[in-house]
Amino acid sequence: EPEVTQTPSHQVTQMGQEVILRCVPISNHLYFYWYRQILGQKVEFLVSFYNNEISEKSEIFDDQFSVERPDGSNFTLKIRSTKLEDSAMYFCASTLKRQAEKLFFGSGTQLSVL
Amino acid sequence: QKEVEQNSGPLSVPEGAIASLNCTYSDRGSQSFFWYRQYSGKSPELIMFIYSNGDKEDGRFTAQLNKASQYVSLLIRDSQPSDSATYLCAVDTGAGTALIFGKGTTLSVSS
Image (cartoon, rainbow over all chains, first blue to last red; front, side):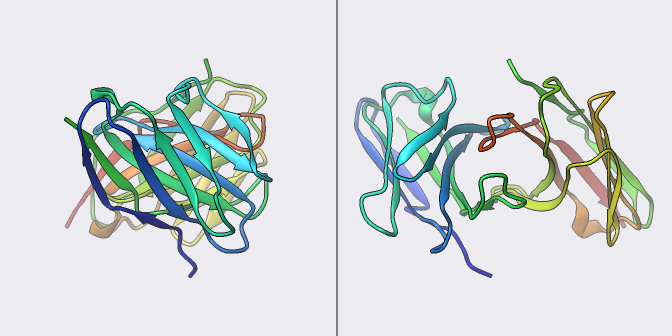
């Protein structure tokens, strides 16, 4: 089965630093997502992206976050100035259709902000 | 604020029993309903989706939807120790792209 690939698997950074989380969605998929999960908490939607623009975003996705599809394969999440509370597992996901039956998740990037 | 509520558990059942997991949601405009399974430290994986009122069966799993009561459930028949995981209920936001997840119910199946 095709996979969504995320790198790195673990990222440690100092508070106030910028981080970029990288994802390679499944090649023929059109919709891309970032979700996060703070340890012991629920999976939270951050942003969805289609046709090179944000289609939906949550209240969590404030000005410190941005997403980009810099080429035909990568999808990135940038956090400009990390805070302690940004520490979480960040999941990238992709789907072929808008009302998708299955959200394909990557294995996640564990971000630790010190 | 759109919410999805689940009992956190743990729900403990013996091997071979039926496990029943429940979920309520707040947004009457939601159209798509999903059950994901998440093992510790891993990403969620889809078990089932359901769009219409009633039951939907897939192997040992049955999803039930009651839109009038804003209630979704998942039954797991012949539970196995390998079913031990956290089960996440997810509902679409109505805008068509994002999912709202519940906190999940932890299931423990003892052999």
